Image (cartoon, rainbow, N blue to C red; front, side):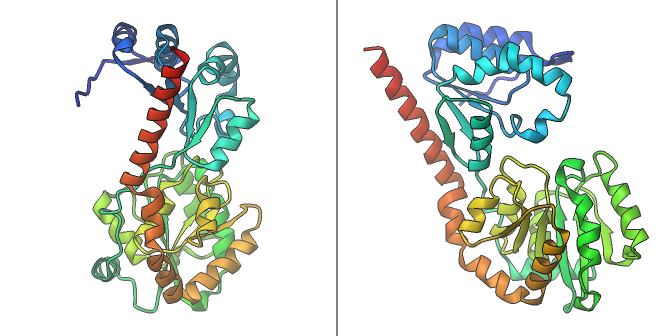
Length: 335
């Protein structure tokens, strides 16, 4: 498979690449399906228009960019952009690919009547795996005692991640549990600085560690070393962190605004709560930490459910099935 890269630049409307747009227009008829990943960019508009003009079926993957949180970011740009270009792009597509039922519902709420196909993100379960050896090594490296209960928060520190509720959640957590919380990820918008100040005001600084961004191998070790992973996001179209943590045998407590939350809860793999109740988060978190062995064993015992739904093979098969179906439908229309 050949991959072609093109020079790009940003202007007032977003990412633009004249060579890419020209290549798509010139070659689009060589392909059976066009898959456009992303919205709000001139490059995606050009690809959709080229496919539409050539009569080639195309799929659009918004990747959460049509969700309610996204509309609060630069609304002065997005509302006119939607009515001028993006609405047509998605409405005239052969299918809109979403990664969760929640994302699909958000598209329906926008009045999108195009076929909506739910196919989750794939997780390489050969990389994300449980390991008692990695658990012990990571806890020793970070001087986590055998009787300490470790809470992990992984991902960029940003307003969207909803981390501002955690000081209140942890303030209500009994200290005699012996808990510690570790944040892994870079501070993108000052959220980390504000969190540190909030924890200091609650006299919890000694229980909080900020590590910064790490590589994949270190993150696998951290998931194994933790007793629970928290994900209180304001919005996630899917939520890779939750599935990665579960694949490493780490229990997960996440916001009901994370796309995969409902499905993981139905599978018995995670607890999903609204962000509006820090008290409920504290109660659920305390229960997980007190029964951490049981919680970890339950997650590890249901790993096959993750494989059936989120493995690279399962997701690739689902996407191939979508492509074949669209190609067949196009063939019937052209008879």
